[in-house]
Image (cartoon, rainbow, N blue to C red; front, top):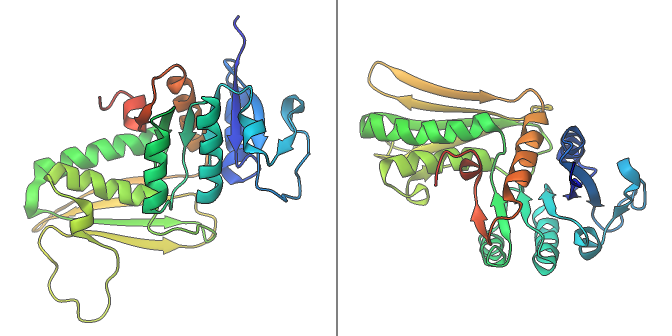
Length: 264
């Protein structure tokens, strides 16, 4: 058997990082190669599986690794991605809440390395994006689109990246731009619902890993597409699947639908 590919896990001790490390351990084709955390982390220097010590040095983490999986805050994500680009290490990025400038930097760095970037690495959620696009095209403007999402109380960005991606899929199905039609809040005398609006509403509480409902509401009927997460394990396994897929790919920015063969 050939040597396993070594994975740098960025945000290795976070909620998702722990599940990613567990998912890496499930695959004989992969092994933990580096564990990156923020400078000053209380567990910096701690040895994890395979004797890998937690580091805060992005360049050291990328050295000798074949691929990186990144679930970190936006600043940490960009620091890791810059180091990965310098080292020629392809990346899988699940960070949400990036600013426009940060998204532009991701796009620029993907000119140097292959980057799989997704709002959600669940296989089922990416099928939901696909279905949302098709349903929006088939149902047309006679059905109003509304999205409701709920996540744990500690989530720092809203709406979720997944909810925004569902909204983008609806807009794509209609041949529209989400930014021109999204409605993120309603209060007071809002007036009638604008034509072709795509509503996205946010709920927060408890330890919910993530739940998204897309409503297509027509006259006398509605269609609901729902995804509910009970754990984070399927997100981690999807990210690992993307890491295996991106090995050897040419520079560029890819998404999870491409990994799954749902788009070109």
